[in-house]
Image (cartoon, rainbow, N blue to C red):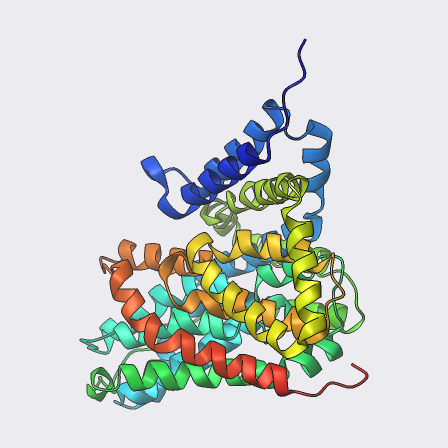
Length: 425
């Protein structure tokens, strides 16, 4: 039997078509289908052995467990009405001011993103904010809805746990909590502030609309209170694990499963809807991406980029930081930040990356998607959540907002990152 011929061009074609499938979703099939098919094609064509593919997929163990834990806790929060309760409280606290409501939504989004990931902020908070806004008679809810999407990107590197892409970029090189905060603290604050200021300024006319002061706050059921306690416990566990430099996947998964068991014992009928409501297809999507990156690594592209980056850093470390961040920020809007994160993580593993360089890459990965809908999975899910509520936001419409927000936020954040001195960190 003839041995299949190795072809770098074929590998690149399969990877490109798989990414195109993620972005375009032909035949309305889940994103994971196209990535898994691409990974299988690489194996069937002999470009990767099955053993190599399984080994590559196995590298994502920590990401899988982290995602399972976060998806469990996020769906529990949605199903128990916790986010509806928080959104109603925000409307009541706004006291008739659309601007104050915008600020409150943004603050809630920061907290949710920081401790429950960007996908949760975009997917779960969005319908809750929309429902509360409708009860308050908010006729122009788009600034508040854009806030749900953009704060999910802006606060994505406030903590390591704030975005699954962070775990991908730093795979095997997880910094401690103190190191993370010391490195990203000022830059993250700038990203959050710049995104808020740019979005607020661009939608300032719509934010003049008054809203109702008398909005009923739904009663938070006992299961919602249990979920709130569970979220606090999970946040503490993850912060402790991060501070000790330990894995984040298992603590997140155990905490999420533990909260599910406690809530199910209290209200048995809630467990199955929660498990059914989770987007499980994200797990094969991530596994397939690991396999595709392994295939791309065989082409020598990661080594070539690592060599080019090393040379650039030798000539001008500052230029390397700026160029890496800007190029990545643009690339994620063409190929989605998750595939780019996998590839960037592989390249960083081959270079002598300073904390500033790794940080600039992460700024591009996390903040770059604020430009367009295809930039991140969280924004794609945000758009789908709006469509389920009968609100249509075109990709060009989102791009008009993104153009006013992303460039300013990325450039100011990279400036802070490049100028932030970190001796001994």
